[in-house]
Length: 86
Length: 162
Length: 251
Figure 1 (cartoon, rainbow over the protein chains, first blue to last red):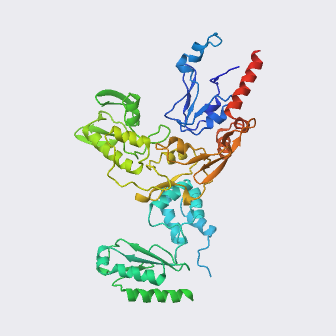
Figure 2: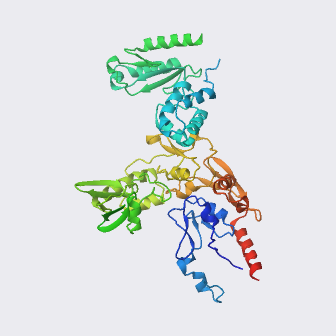
Figure 3: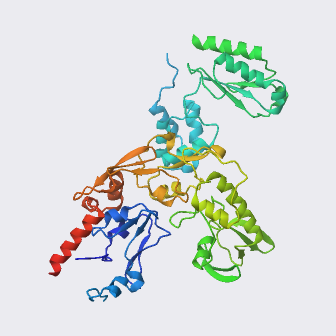
């Protein structure tokens, strides 16, 4: 079964981020990476209990699911309507 | 007998106690005081000073290396400084420096192996009328000649060996 | 307090105490820069973010990253004067970092494709532009391992006494923020070599892949208070474990 970022209420990634680069978008409820604040230390990737914080080794930045700004493309693309956003 | 100044942690502590703990603005003063007593700035002293002032050891080192006047290797008991300002230069300061380098067997900026002498050059101390000028342990010695300097160094060396 | 002023003719509002570059970028006005990062204090090191600030009779060319906004100023980001000075600074930077793509790209955008200045053989960090972003980031993270050493043409970035530092945890944030990517970080499956020392990785308890360095984890535990077992599994193994756990709940 495929899961993605749970946008945890008490998110480990945001808790460990030393730069304040992981913040919740109040509109979508998603925790987003502020790329201009991320210093690429990699702590969030190590701390996420579900393995859904990623580190872009080219850009040396944290990347994560931001629910595509409120309209997740994964849900839109799923051919069997197994994914929906509620 | 080794002339390496033995690292006296009590001495370092007592120097640091003269400055308010946590007062980062005293950083350069502390460096001056430490060097005045230890003749150079050893790693341990910088670490202790950083702790005392509440700044990072890295910052302490960064500031210290910014200034030419601070040294990080043990220095000689006597410091011989040759003025290389324009006035001294035209009156033969380069020959003074050469003489000292030959006599002490060190290059300018260096310290003799027995840690008795450090040889330095400066770019004018503002005492041009006295040139050429050698400064020996803080005392200005004007109208210096290579022969006079050589004698002086010999005397100091003899005295120091006793 | 709110201040009001113009950037390239556009009326903007900002809070007192904000820096000009941040305000400009927020309004979609692009000012190039190399040493600016939102997570740390600006110091105006790279001199690329120059702008022209007119205040009453006075006109100054200044770095925008550390310029505190004032009421009534008139900011111009692309005058002939600004372009001239920026091009000069980029030509100097190009001598320092001739192999940096970022610097070369910025320079050529300012019409500078070659430099009249001698390239500086800059050891141990070729292409370092001495912007101190690594030092500032290391300080912000609370490690305080890095510093500038010396001054003038001998100035460089390094560790105190050029010795391995207890403070460095091997997080490699210095490389992550470095505009010219000039810091050497070499990872093997078990160790990371950085700043002349080696750090052991924590290896995933399932597959053995590296997670983060032990020192970095220890620092994170003491500072952030998450339990140790948060850091003992790699991203992929955590993913599959989580998937299985959720599947068992759903079905």
